Image (cartoon, rainbow, N blue to C red):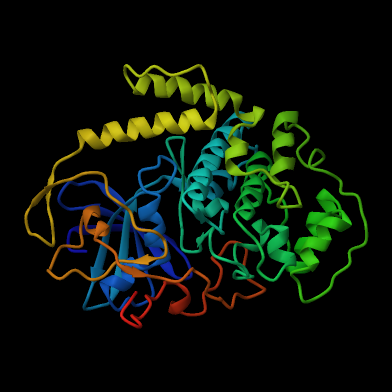
Length: 418
């Protein structure tokens, strides 16, 4: 941290604190997330779930960018230097007397769905989508805090008490950890409602109260849906059939298109719930797709596109723009292994379940090119069990019992293979 000057503290969680810092070389300001846990080695720092996820998801306009890792061997402390944002969604709506305009809420929700679609298509789901983890700057939304993320290819059961209770999907509440990436869409729907009403949709005091509040709004689900949950639950449950009052009474000024999107994002059955990519195609986001298409056409000079507004075409245009930026930014960097000069091509990012071995020669931790070292040690799926409390406060991160549940330990070599 010798290259950075601490300006002020801007936030603190259970396992980290965030400070506003200034780079002494270029004068730019960044957000520094300092981990409270001791990190024993640089390899262990690379194996942190949050670091691996941010490397894989880098360069997307709606994902918070990791600029640098700063590891101090003497104090065994780790800092993540990220781009600085203005505020989060919770700070944006806190204290407001009137809800956000619906067009503004849809603008933010469209960007959030793009971030989730990028995550899910790269094999990761967030598991802790809430207003505090969604950052805003100049009307640009970025998803942050990937410490609870998980590989979509890991087999259930997962950690039961994940996510913040108010934004926890029914399958997280009623099963023994049998949930998937669709839980992120439920959480996103809760955030969408909160932007339109300034109030949390399901502010339960405990798990039973949380389920009761969901049934009070959406109604008791069909017996076939509940049967899916009972197959993966040791404890049996039976709910009194009731008809929910509906979302329209809670946000009467909301348009029919936004209500339709909300209902599809908050489908009780995860198999019928919208995916992030399908949500981007919803008619509710027609204006956002058209505006994005016009902006991309202005940005990508000379690139002719078809008159299509599907997310697939938007994703293709974004990739073309990203490839152009990379070609313009190509320069030579020092290879830490050969100590020679090699051209800086787009980085090959390792998978979430792959560890990066310590290099054989000394090198600087600063710079993202040091994160792309060759990998060879395979890691197991992220399936650690965390002893989360039933009474996690809604505005706090879920409890992690120890450091082993926060990073992924590498496998030991057995029988001459990895």
